[in-house]
Length: 144
Length: 144
Length: 144
Length: 144
Image (cartoon, rainbow over all chains, first blue to last red; front, side):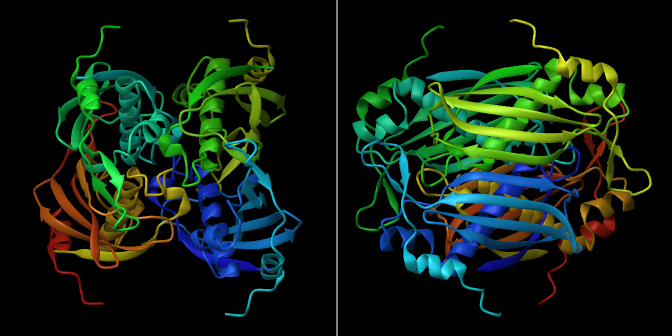
């Protein structure tokens, strides 16, 4: 399956009075990793996706994380993100955030490929993921 | 001029490892106060503004703040926001954030009334603020 | 079990370019709800907890949320938070965020009662939750 | 004077429903740039500063920004940060955020070198910046 990897420096402003990352910030980091993975896998960003496909986003339907080791200002952490499953109109991603090689936070997310629901304004409905996008998400990442 | 006032509880997640509010959070608080003031003054929210006027927003063109006293998790602070000047296509707001009556943070902002610039996609251009909106912004707040 | 309830106005700055809440913001809202619940249940804030008990926090060990209905700028949502289980050194909370009565986001969290681990600097270790705190967390909320 | 430069990818979660960066996020980006500049200039991070000097931080006393061109998800922007003045117990920094070479946001900040005020708990007081730190902040950046 497709995956990516990036190094993130923990910022002073990511951390709370206990000196550790305020956990919603991990979800923001994971979201950006997912966005980057999808850009890399699909060869286009969300703007281009909107134009190329009848697409209105891939919002989160379920997010989960386990917090094993605290991280702090000035830590350099590695986030590895992989597609773990692609279904008809949804897909799953996994994030492993490591600090000096040790697993610090593990994240799991389910996202759904959606279009705006013309019959219910302000609501969305799932739509099958286009076949070529399924193909891109499920192919192994090319060696760097 | 129009003004409003609200009490904000400082949250754990607003604060940094020094135990004090991470200062960009004050700007987020001030932004929400400005949005609330404009909703109250105009009697409608941004969604309604978009529909009622040829309007695309009132983005910040300049923001400034002075930080006098630190605030912390569990502090209840009061934010008083006032329109200080309304010009042809811009307006100014002031925020006074107090803690137990003492001025802790003072904010100043200049915003511009804009429409999307049809000749330069992705850019905006200023537009005169409609007369009835000028009237609402410059009238004294009704006594509560 | 102890519970609390608050109304939250969705802010412009909580939302992303799709016009819906950027989901890590829900976790920040839930965190504040949990902090408020613990303050109400224990009759003291974190500062006082640090002084009263050999306590260094109740960090998240697992967080999960399901996103059912998008919420947007200017929505007033209700967040109901309840203790669902109290174990020896951990406890569980549930959040139900509703919009016009409909369940929009559901959150689950496991937190652990910790002290700083003197033998491994920068790390924490779980500690049994004091009996009177278990009692407070597991008693029904007094009728308002 | 000392300066640094970094490229930042604008994230989906940095942007608001108008599709442009929610301006408090720029202040968070600038804060991290200032932290990185100080780490580079002083050859140590805040943790080490606390240990090496009688130091309790360099909080913001005044922050200002002008917003000239909106930036959006997927923009790569460059942030150049320079020390512009070093006084007895305060120093000034300037940030220039450019997009495709054009100045998009300009930031100015005044920070003060502080210690905890032992006579007024929870408050801080300014202290002269150590001479060797003044020297480091005012020397030109070594060519890369």
